[in-house]
Image (cartoon, rainbow, N blue to C red; front, side, top):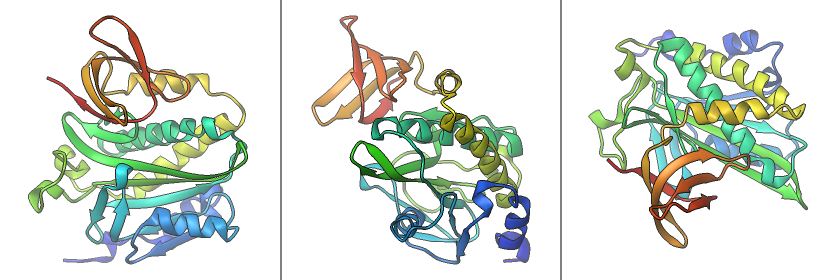
Length: 266
C-alpha cells in the first residue's frame, strides 16, 4: 500500500539541504524519462549550479553504452545534479569518482552495507549490481561548461525478482533486510558529495585516488575488458589520477585503459 512515507517529500528534503549547494534549485517529478536528460536541458537553459533533479519513476533512464535503467515508482533513488566546475575536460573523471565514493559512503551510513565500486561507474555488493552512475558534460574549448552527474540506486526494490537483467542485481533492502528511507539516503549522499566537491574545487584531490582504489572491487582481480580495440585480459592494479584502469597483462606489461566494459574473471 502506498503511503506518504513511501513518497519523497520535497519540502522536507529542501529543509534538510537548506544550507547546501543542492538545496537551491530542486525539482521533483512523479514520472520522468531520464533525470540526466532533464538536467542537461536545464543546464543549457542556464539553470544554476547545484540544481537537483529527482524522479519517483524513471521510464527511459540511461547507463553507459546506452543501456537502459528502468525503475518502478516510489522504490528507488533516482536523481541528477548539475555542476559548473572550473575544470578541464580531462579532469571531469574526478567528479565521477567522488560521486561514486559519496554514494558508497551514503549507503553504508544508512544500512551498514559497504558497496564497492566497479570501474568506471557502478556500485556492487559482492557479485551483484546495486546501482550505476552516468556522467555527461559539455565543453567549451578545453574547459567544461557544465557537468551532469546521475545516480540510480536499487533501494527498496529488487529487480531480479521481477525481470531479467544484464547483470545479477540486488538492492539495499535486500542486503540489509530492512526498509531504507530514500530521503535519509539522499541527504547522506549529497552532504558527503558537497564536501568532496568543495575539496575538488580547491585542488585537494590526492586523497580521493587512494579512497577510490580502496573501494575498488577490481583490485588484484583478474579482469577482462571489452574495448573498441578488442578484448584485453590481466590483473587490475589501480585506477590512475586520470581515471584510467591500469592492468598487468599476462606478459607482465602494464596496460592503461581509458574506457571499456569490464568483467571479473573467477
